[in-house]
Amino acid sequence: MTINNFVSLTHIERFLVRFPNAVLTLLIGFLFLRLLQWGLEVALRAARVTKPMQDILVSMSSAVLWIALFALVFQSIGLNQIAIALTSSVAVIGLGIATGANKLVSDVVAGVFLARNRDFKIGQHIKIDQVEGEIYSLDSRKVRITGKDGQLYVIPNTKFDEQVWEVKETKT
Image 1 (cartoon, helix red, strand yellow):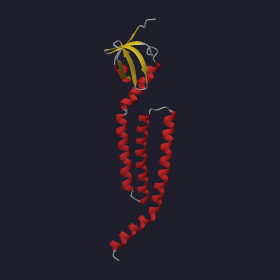
Image 2 (cartoon, one colour):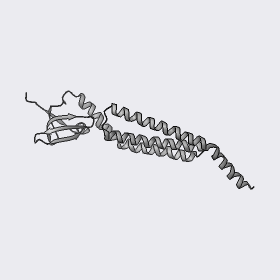
Image 3 (cartoon, rainbow, N blue to C red):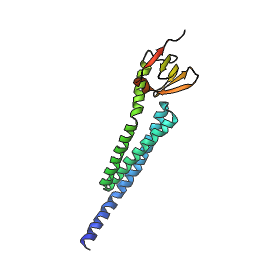
Image 4 (tube, rainbow, N blue to C red):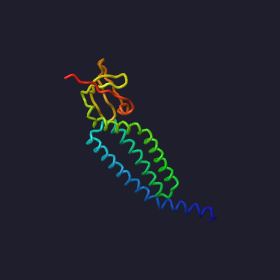
């Protein structure tokens, strides 16, 4: 037996010794992942999050959890470099999501301030940009205004932070 065969044999032996631990990690991780998905779905339903948003949040969290699980499996086998590459890909994905969510967060924050503004309430007559009408509804991201022309205008909350809007007198 040469030295090259001896080195190869020890690598294979190390892999075979670690393989049951990797399978156990995968099985327990799968069960834990399913439990977390179920818990997230229940929490989102209880919070009355819309079904499309639930699907998006559950699929994004599932992708991150699966990547983390496979990183743990590779680490338990001894393939630390692959595990590091997988976890760094999660960081890059997270950075991309955070960049894309910037506008969402801005809309939500602006919505909170609009909801607390005493001059801004449902039924109030306002004018912003070229739209004039009555506030029909306000949610975390958008304001809906029924215009004088009968059209329904949907305006992002941040637009109210960026532009001057005018409160019109309501006729009582």
